[in-house]
Length: 359
Picture 1 (cartoon, rainbow, N blue to C red):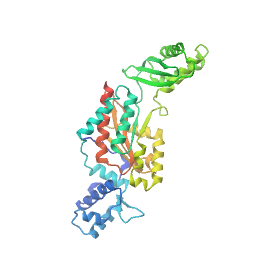
Picture 2: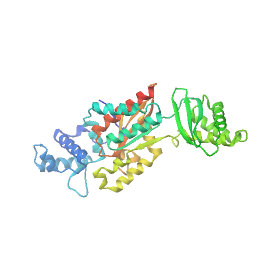
Picture 3: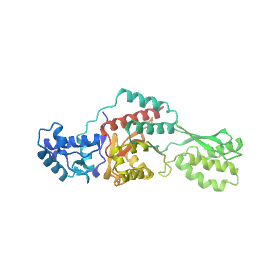
Picture 4: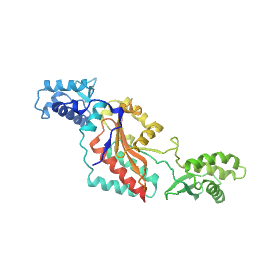
């Protein structure tokens, strides 16, 4: 069973110890019903679910839970739904997380293994896979490259396209397709490769980018103009260690429009899409996941990024062959995510992705 970790001090609120057995049972039933249907839950729904209490007694307990900040009321319904604080309490103390089935394990392993020879393709496939299985938007942030560069090569694939190949000291290889301007010759490709290899070897990509971009202006007179442009384009093709250059992969936005509850509040969906566009903030949030050993869950107002849309993020770190955490992968969607199902999916996908990075 995967472990998961609360984000910390931002989740301060009532504890389960403040709830008696009756309140805890009613609270659990309300949250489970809401997560399943997306609808506010009334006292009659609870009483029909097998609780041996009158609707009036249930309403009193629901009122107590509301005063604790665990339940809120929709403006269009007399029923109650969990607040973000209530969802946090449920996830931390009452949620029963199982494991994924054999079919899902096989699907994850098969699809990721088919993309495992190229890190970028594996990350892209992992994001798409999670979005399909979890019904939200799959997000993954590419790892920071801190290994030194061993070799760089530009390989012509046709008259207007080349493959930029970078080999790192840790054995990883990154490939990027590049569009070529008309008239690029094989000698220009070789000249650009030679220029980079003479200056970039032993440096991290971040160090090399800073050094070469400064030097390139002075070197342009000695370096063929076409080759100089190839060097600049090649550097731009690789993702570096800076937040502004880090690759953020998001797949499955369309899934967010299929949620019935979300469609009833299009403004909230628009704000959720805005959250996805906040690349630097989302990368920062996912980078925080790297500090944890298990799945982390961020709900609504617990983070500035989701404070308006009320979104939620379930994410887990993945490791490279040296057992070092290098990135994070997860699912983002409305706070009414299926936590019990998505937590093990995210956890297992992260572990499979990590195994692929060992090879």
